[in-house]
Length: 246
Ligand SMILES: *[C@@H]1O[C@H](CO)[C@@H](O)[C@H](O)[C@H]1NC(C)=O
Ligand SMILES: [Cu+2]
Image 1: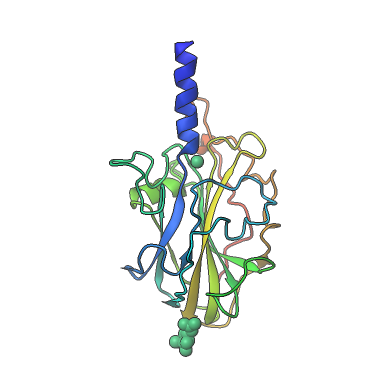
Image 2: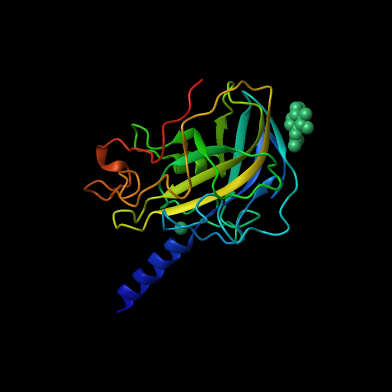
């Protein structure tokens, strides 16, 4: 009884240790907490790929920032994740920026909009600009995010058309994803303005619509026979379209 009660407590603690994207940096300059990014108040994931809010999340922290962040094409863009808004939930929070169990990919998409500060989030056309899945040593995008104190990075493609976009930062946690409907989707959208760009976009998809509950990167057992979350020696297919190329 004691053992199973403890196990249950341990499991529920793990499953509650979620994450929130909450800061944007450009070439190393941090814009600050909740500036130019629509972050959810709750760190809970979306778990249904057809959820109407899977584009930019729900329960967005108010008031929403009116800032639109200028990003020169070719710049190094960062988005910072934390256990709760502000980062750690308690001192020395072991689950900040995310519980170590939450292995999975880090992905970025962009959608062209007329006014990034005011734009709605439905019916947008999203193209993928970056993905970081599983490497050959068994490390995930999430492992690199934890090693970078919650920061995830990509390079703004030099050829992407100048103008305003919503930037969708996403983490998919796969620790329970061997059961359909148990992958955890975390996301927030930043309000950005690409300057000095080209004229390109990538293949676009819709959210919801881009993912299926049975995609090989969403319905997946990430554990090897010894229980290590290293992908079991198989390559990992990040869900969604290919990353745009210049
Ligand atoms: C986007 O950048 C262009 C070029 O610098 C600038 O003219 C425009 O005002 C910017 N738009 C916003 C919303 O910041
Ligand atoms: Cu979680």
